[in-house]
Structures are given as structure tokens and as C-alpha cells.
Length: 176
Image (cartoon, rainbow, N blue to C red):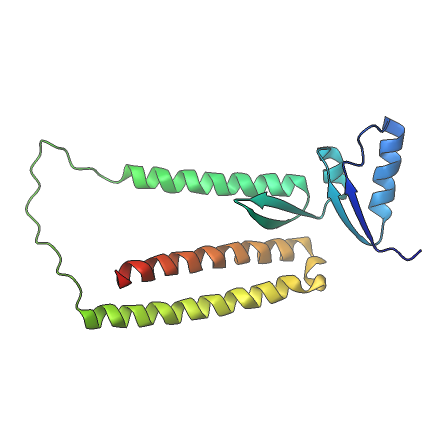
């Protein structure tokens, strides 16, 4: 029939083992695109090449099947824990100890703030252009042929988005 896309929602429900294995084999040899929604992790492992997850109300795309998705999520959670631990480990003042008086830093002049704002805006513009380039790279179906390369591009995309968010936060603090 020439169909090149399948959308399946929980296809292994109510299948016996033999039917499930036949379905898995058929999906592995299917030459087109497959959108598979399933709680069957073994099936996801066997046929998945990209995982799309709903996170914080948005769709996030991860290269690879279920194991790669789990690994990337664990890495993100570990990185978040480490960042929180570093923030917590910063020395705190003891309430009884007197700190030597420190001169309050003078507020930056309006000209200095304007200069810093312009610098940050230019940096944001460069970072957003880099993000667009990565998105164009990821939009090319050929870029998904090499799993390592596409995983690297996906990580670069996530890092570029984080960098842009950080730059906007910095710009907001400078703008006051």
C-alpha cells in the first residue's frame, strides 16, 4: 500500500507471547516512521530509536530508545543534585561571629549597566543563532543516521537552551 508511517497505542496489550514477538519482529523490519505509545519497555528497547517525553508541559526529544532516555534523565538529575550540593556547601556565616565590615559594593553606573546590557544582548543573539543552527541540523533526517552524532547534537541543543536561559536571567538582573 506504500504506507510509511504507523501510529500504535499500546499494541502489546492483550497479546500472547508469540503474537508479541511477531509484532516486535514486524516493527523492527518496518521501513517507515513509527510512533509507538507503550508501557512495554522491552518493546520500546527493541524498536525505539528516539524517545519523546512530555516534561514540564513541553515535548522533549531524546535520541535512542528507553535505556538512553533513562540514562540522560539520571545524568540531568545527578547534575542538578551536584549543583544544589555545591550551593549548600558554600560557607555560611556563623550568627555569633562578627564578620569584618566590608564596604558595600557601589551600584554600577547607568552607563556601565547599559554597556553590560548591550554585551549580554549581543551574546544572547549569538547563542540564539547557534541554537537555530543546531535545530536546523537536528531537523535534517540524515543527522539521525548516526546515533552518536545525533545524541551529541541533542546534548548541544539542550546546553544551548540552558545557556540562553542563563544569559536572559543575567540580563534581567543587570537591567534591574
